[in-house]
Length: 136
Image (cartoon, rainbow, N blue to C red; front, side, top):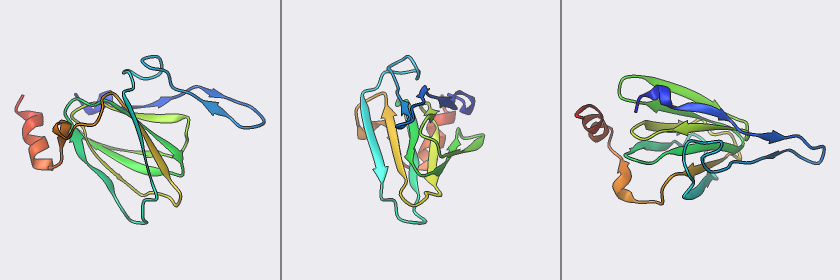
């Protein structure tokens, strides 16, 4: 899939003086059904996450707290997104390499994923990703 398929999605935001509420519903706000949810936190200063691509997995990445940058790469083009609001999610389609860095202190990154974890779905070496991406 091309990089253009990846995009920021604004999620519903219900304003309330006691605190705002945002929600996500399967296939309603995002283009897939959620099979798994995980989150990343306590990332040390200067650390990077990601550094892989998925063969079939669709994801929505949300900054639940703090902020971070995500650079997406389809093998030809790269684009960096800064996530800092919990009512925006970055949709990442399959076959897109991602690097995540510039975490602010106290950041929490949550991922809504279309499939359960399987190591077979990963490209962990950029060269292998590039070969698979352009040999189709």
